[in-house]
Length: 338
Image (cartoon, rainbow, N blue to C red; front, side, top):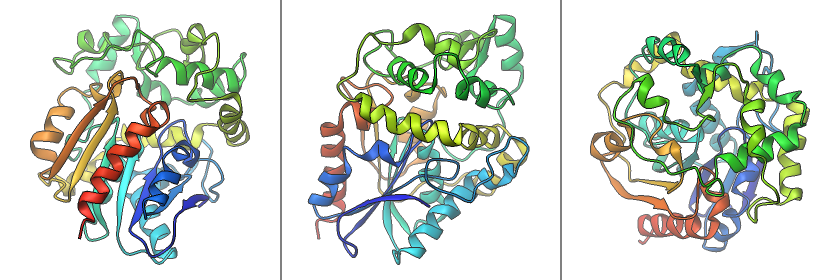
């Protein structure tokens, strides 16, 4: 596992887990401040990403290795290799459910958890009713996770006409607070009619792939939170490895067999101290109707804060790094006050 590391070993540990399509590098703006405050900070490229090796990146390869409990095992193995026996785990985007299952399955190791952008509504017990996909198709739409599970998705993005750099620039912009159409609100139900209210990066046009979906939203210039040099790090990593490693996570998340494996946790809650952070302009907070409310009401029994940061969309730790760091430190310092 390729890791970024800051701070001294032996200090309280913070494990940072990125999402899709990102890297450990996505934590570059918060790691120095956490380390300066006295924490040992570790951010790995997770299975399927960046400089981490040993994973099968083919569509017909070892899909089971990407199931969420194996991603939890990756985290445990990394900590064991580093001689760390307890940590706060912080997960953003798809890193959020990994962090949640870390805290749910091994609270002795993952002693606190911060979920970012993707709320945890409780253990998965059944796949989403497939009828919603049929209903969306009748409306000329499709859910992005269904698209990400297709064989063509990797090539669509990796070999897109505009190039990976331009694709990622538009993708990141479209999901950020810089795109003024991001004005999220709760959805009323798991229904095609409600889902159709989501932006097209979540509920796509039926005839378009993701590269085509985001292309019209290419920004005119650089965002202050993502320079050309920073974008080049992401573009270089995904040019080299492709997107299939990350897409395997979505295939597992929609696979009834792997969802069934999580039923062992049915009815259980995260009992370690927890916090939620997201951008106020992040539709990810509401893309699974009811999860935001269940997280605060029953799924996390020791929720110490739920923060929606103004001026940030989906990439909250990059768009509003200072406020994100401030909230993380307040949470960590409270837990380590003795």
